[in-house]
Image (tube, rainbow, N blue to C red):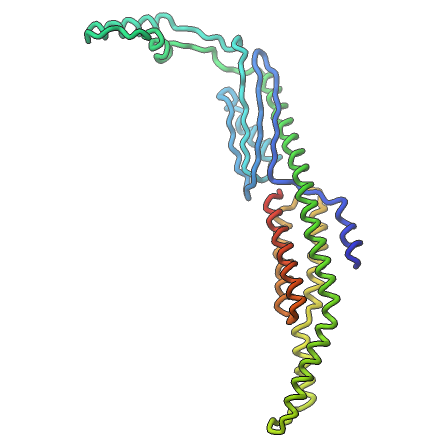
Length: 308
């Protein structure tokens, strides 16, 4: 299969998702505003950290479930912040309690014979339960608005992942194309390599026969050993399997859902075939090409660590 045809068959359709992403959305409520932010980084498993106000604690499980379904994997931080206009949560001062604290503090200064502190009022206001705020309760319509904001933030995060994934995809395809190019170069060198090995062995065998002190070996046995040795050096199967692995990699890359883990397993198989080609090569130029293939494969593995 020609490399250009092989590559162009998949390159235009492939789509993967990056592990990293960011989404942000707001919701307008009665007298307040809700801000939803979602940030995701690389992680082998789903690690979700929620920061939500106390009024949404009863919705925590629902939020976790909905977010987890969209994230799949990654270290995620999702926060929901409520910003009040000041009217929605009225502040009240417990005057009776404040008066009691004031009397006790001034009485204590008299008992100790110490002057009353000039900031005694501010100290009274900081005492427990002096400042009272209205309960931070949400109406059903408020939760619906916040829920929609969570969905919108997740949609933005997915869009971010797609954009980042496109960049990763383009880079990975470049490295796959280079591996296939090096694969073709090895194929062109393979024929001359076998001829050179045969010539070298026959040359050494002839030198061996020139020495009359050496026993004359059986010619048929020599030819059998030669065939066996050349079969050990043959890399045809490895080349075929490597090409199939590359095809499988691109097919998997082309699937509707991102397959980061599966692609990682395929690169392991690609690496095995490349290593075997190198160990069987017995040729400096082919081994140099194998080193280049390994370098390209390592770059692919690095990028797969960023893929969902």
